[in-house]
Image (cartoon, rainbow, N blue to C red):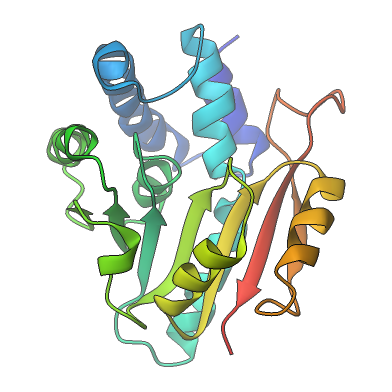
Length: 224
């Protein structure tokens, strides 16, 4: 099975857009495979696993992120800025940027060698809407980001969450890819002093949680 093609169909991308998206995403996947062992970019045992657990997982939140970006535009923002915090190998930032060429993306990563990989990907893919920043989160300008996305394998704890909210513009969103609902409730309870309200949106990752074995959710936090 062509998991990438079928996955894009399942995620609701239009038939007209899929061929070009496939071409660009395959270029990115090739770069991941080529440099993975040297840069320790993703944990995957096969090409299909990269497609499902990393590419399709990243794109499972596309509709939500697209809608948030469109809402910010309607509010009068001149240029929407989406930042992938702790981008690593470019996930979810690069797949989202490929699908949202009209939006500016910032890939923020503290490890220099991974930034070299990200810069290479931006060049290979011709992503004129993407910039790579080799900085710690602490050095990112306050109130400079409309939407901050990240695949949060670590718990959202007080200190980190405070830093993340600080870089958001007022009315901006934090969008964290998370797993099980029970873990989310536990995490968010620990930081309710600074995040009294949040939304949890179930994500459907093609071929990953079709059988109910895996659970993926997007946690949305809006800065007032």
